[in-house]
Amino acid sequence: MTETKYYVIDGGEDSADTRYFLVNTEKETAFKLAAMRGFDKLISIINDRTPHLPYTWVKKRGLSGNYNKQQRGDLGF
Image: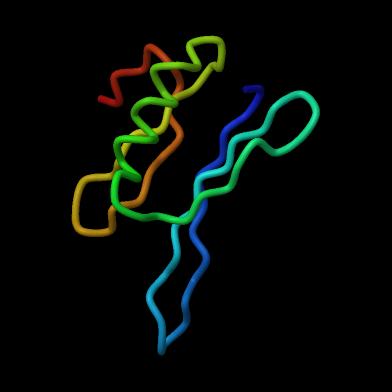
C-alpha cells in the first residue's frame, strides 16, 4: 500500500453523504470501499498495517463519523 484516502461525497439535500476509503498500491487502486458495517474496523486495520505511511486516519468526534488525516506520532492536542 502506497497511499490511502478517505473522502466524502455530498449527497445533496435529498440524500445522505457517502463516505469512501481508497487504497492505492504502486501499480493500481487496490480497492475503493463505500462505508458499510465494519468500515471503522477496516480503517483501524489499515492504519495498523501501514506503519510505513507518515499518517493515520482518526475519526472525528461527534455525530458525523468522518475521519481526519493525522501525522503519525501526533497526539492531536
